[in-house]
Length: 452
Image (cartoon, rainbow, N blue to C red; front, side):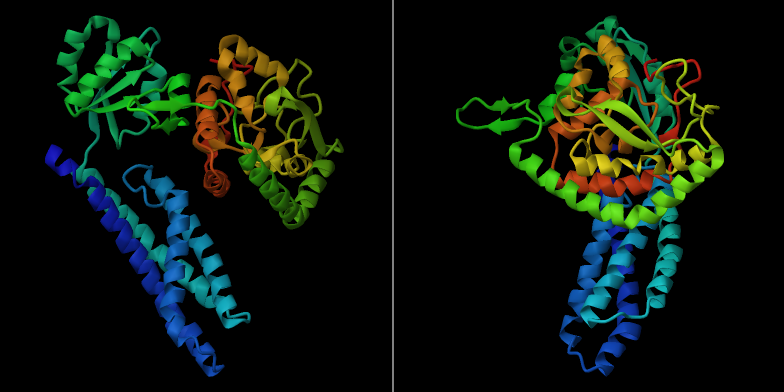
């Protein structure tokens, strides 16, 4: 099994290369059979650029598929991989059609690209299922042991068990059993999960697993995530790690703000028909206000008025501030639809244009709820080192009901590893989560906030 393990990534890489090659070949066929003859008749000398056009299409397809996660066949759920492939092919072919029009310097027939899109779906999606089938047969779920500290690992085990196609938690052990007993047990399993262990007790186990070539999964602490954003200093013969701890640099903030202004203006123009339609539906349903404003926190703890489409009854908070729960009866029929599609958030484009928010960043919390979280997790205010965002790392990789501690870890991961390309990727990934219902799942009925 261990010898076979080293070929896992090679299998994935080979499958991905073959899929990309097939997509490029199908586009090449469409180009040579349909589009190029049209250009030739018009005496446009593009015969020398044929391979360039096909190569650019392949790069576009690679970019979107990689961004949406379509190449992570052995990592994501099969439904996630298929959704990623569907979105990637659609986006790549939209851009590919624009590329064809630019080459022709004229509008070209769109139906060949539509046919290409459906043909790619018919070829690629069954291919994904086939590769996944082979992958799961060659690499069955790993047998794992969870080592935990003072807190119960049940919540983490429940999450891991939701992916039985990849993981198989066979045993748990308390770190207080002692190192000798733990090392003996670790040798019986293929992988180890270190769940919320004190750093002083975690490090010897981590080093033992490293020595024994045992795959190790670790739930990071806040300090671990801060370390991921450090800069290596090599001025001496002793390595140093520098953590600046001030959020984004002035250059990063300038680029981010410029992108926010441009994209918010474009988004307002493009989404204006949708904004008007949603506003009309809300008004016709109960004659109440279309918009809902609320005080939220952004960078440095500054308070601003967030704008959303109203998705609940007008008296939804007569008992005080509280998050939406599962099957919440306060949500109106119109509200249920726009919440599932995240369209209730669209008016926040105006908050972005005003500079109160950014397209990407930690989701803004209400001050009263944030104070409750900070009473339990003092580090929760670390999220305020950057502007609040319409979408963010925690929204893409978490859920509406993700616990504040996990949300903090996800948002800190974004802050410490920020880049322009990360913002671009997260904005594209936002389209994917619109189709994933679990991302809008509310908190339990007995909860008022996301604290469990």
